[in-house]
Length: 253
Image 1 (spheres, rainbow, N blue to C red):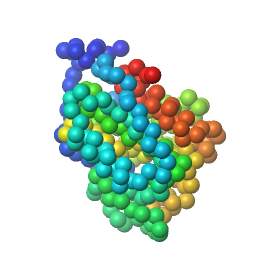
Image 2: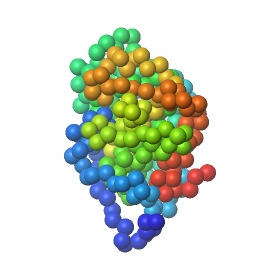
Image 3: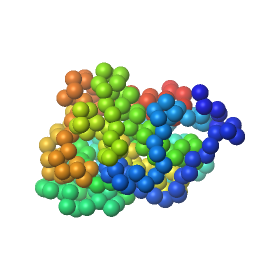
Image 4: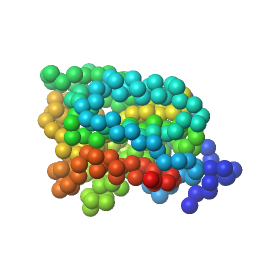
């Protein structure tokens, strides 16, 4: 086990105060420190479990995005870290530097250009969205390590259902047999992060054909339902909550 957070031997990892990271495009992510191995992800800080908020179904993207920014701007040194679990109403989201060319035929589905990194993805009913709001300095975790942690939490969740998944160094996210099942996106602001990971459960995959998912033409997308996993969005949220707390070295209620 790593030493406790108070140990002088525990290195502090650099945390930019205001930056985007993504999570859809490999080159942007590759500029930062290399990812640790999965067994190095269990951190030492003796912090409480994540405070979980279930925000429900059909959540408006603009509203939740504004709430995340407000929470991050108003939080203080003692503010609990939180995990927000929800399903969005149908929406395409484009990263801060995302290219509109990757929106092929959005049709009636609205598009929101937001402040995360990466290109375009789709959110909708049947997809678990997990927004992780962490004080990175207090958690003693670097941004690249956090991206890897988000991926590893999904990989470990799927492993519990006998499905082998893996990340890709050229295209962050989680993949099963080259098909993408989860996307990752982050914003770091004032040394804290928001946005998170989206895991496909039983959503309609057809809207992904209207975009180049994460900026990759022809990228195949899958969902847990197609992998023989009987899992509701609520159950997936509980399992992902447990994985996050484990990887962050926190007790789990």
